[in-house]
Image 1 (tube, one colour):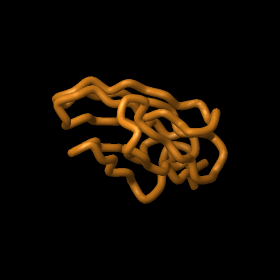
Image 2 (spheres, rainbow, N blue to C red; image 1 turned 90 degrees about the horizontal axis):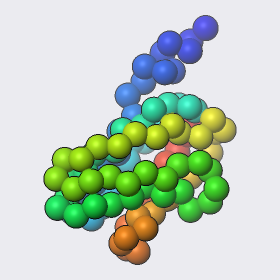
Image 3 (tube, rainbow, N blue to C red; image 1 turned 120 degrees about the horizontal axis):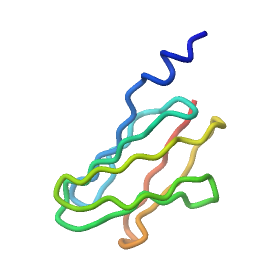
Image 4 (tube, rainbow, N blue to C red; image 1 turned 180 degrees about the vertical axis):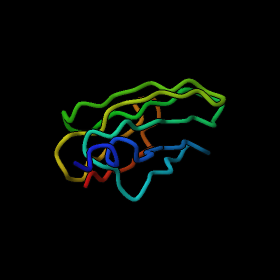
Length: 91
């Protein structure tokens, strides 16, 4: 009941110019697609142990991960570039 709508909701993070463009929020358990438009590899790595850590190849590379099942705000960073930070809001 409503699970089809929840699982079909598009969730995407785009990396451009060493910055994350993050959706306002995603539903719990959503598949999140990350697209890297930069010319160097990046990661989307949760600051806490919330279960996501993906490497995204350069020049349009993509990767996916499953958003945490619990609502909340999940800070993340790039392992390779300490200036890159974002927050994924799950609700």
